[in-house]
Length: 527
View 1 (cartoon, rainbow, N blue to C red):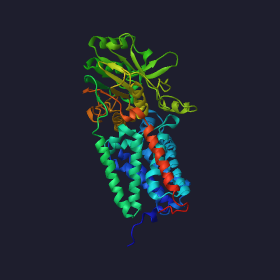
View 2: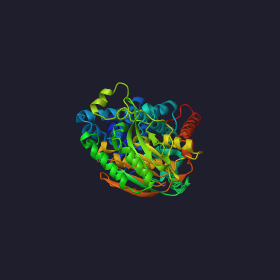
View 3: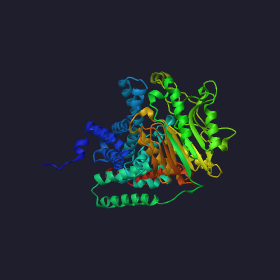
View 4: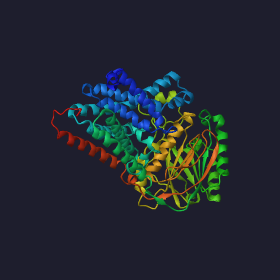
C-alpha cells in the first residue's frame, strides 16, 4: 500500500478548496461555548501547509486567494450563522433571502482572508524566502494585518477574530500586553510552527518547534500570574437585570405597558449599590415614556442612595436619538448621567448610503441612531467609576483601552467596565456565549472587572482575572446579585493599544526581508 501523501490530494485545487471550507467551518468550535482552541491553530496551519507545500511554486496568487477566501467564508458563515435568526424570524425576511444575505456578508468578510493568502503567495514567489521565514515571520504578520483590516474598514466587523479563541488557553496571559490582535498573531505563529513540523523532515525543525511552542505556552501561563492592576476602593454590591423580553414582543405596542411595569418593579425590588438594566430595556424614545416614569426611578435612587443605570433611546429632539444608558444616583441629583453608544452597527443602528431598502425590509425599529462621542466619562458609584459600553462596542478593545488611557491620569479613571446588550435578536444561539467570551477578552486586556446586563443572556459578573463570579441562566427572567471589586492601574495594552502588535508585525516583516535578501536570489524556495 502506498504511503499517504497530502500533496497528492492537495494538488487538486477543488480538493484544496473543500479542505479549506471544512477547516474554516470547524473553527466555530474554537469559540464559546465549545472552547476547543486548538482548532483555531489547526485551521490556519492547514492553509499555511497548502501555501508552503512542495509544489507551492506552481500556486498562483489567484488560486491562493481562492483558498484563503474559502477558509474565511466558511469560518465567518459558521461563526455568525445566528444572524439568520434576526433576519428571518424577527426581521421578517424570507428564509432564502436571509441565507443569501448572510452568504454575501460572509463572502465580503472572506475577501480579507483571500487577500492574506494572495499576498503570502506573492511574497513567496517574489522573494523565495526559506520555509521557516515564511511560516514564522511573513505569514503571521500578514495574518494579523488581515484581521486588523477586517476590524477597521467600513466601521469594522471583528467578530470571532482568531485571538478570541484564547480567553481560556495559555496564550491568555499575553492579552494585557498585546490585546486580542496580538493573541491572533501568536496563534498564527503556532500555526506556522505546526505547518513546519508537518512539512519539514529536518531534525533541527523537529527539535526546535516543540521547544519553542512549549516556551511560548509557558510564558503565557506565567504572565497569567502577573497582576497589572490593583484593588481600588470598596467592593460594590451590584444587581444586573435580565428581563427576558422576547424580541417579537419587545417593540410591540401591545406589550409596552407590561415591559415598562416589569423593569420598574425589578428596579425597585433590587437592593444594591448599582442596579443596571439591559440595552434599550425601555423600548421607546425617552420622550414617549409616561411623564412620571423616569422621575419615579430617580426619586427611588435618591431616597435609597442607589445608582440606577437604564438602557433607553434618549431623544434629543426632531429625528435625533441615541442608544443610551441614563444614570440616576445621589451623585447626579442635579442632572442624570448619560452615556451614548458611539460605535454603531451598520444596518441595525445606522443606514449606510444606498441601503435604506434593506433596513426597511428587515423592519428594524430605531434603526438610525446618532453616534455619541468616542471619549465619554465614567459614572461614579460610591468610590468606583463605572464605564459603560453598549452591545457591539464590546468588540472594539482598542476603543475601550483608549478611553481608559485618556482617563488614566485623572480622578475619573474607570475601575469597572459595564456592557449592556440585547441579544434577543439571535434567539437561543451561540451568539450569547460568544459575546460573553469577547467581554472576557476586554477584562484580560484591561485588568478590570466587567458587568454584563442583557435582555436574554449572557448576564454575568466577571472579575479582573477573567473568571465568572456569577451568571444567570440564558432565556430566564431574573436579577443577578454579586459583589465586585474595582481595579485601578493600566496594563501595557491600555497604555499602548495596538501599537505594540503593530510594531511586532513591522519588525517581523523587516526581519523576514532582511534574512531573505541575504540569500542568493536564485535560492530554492523549499530549502
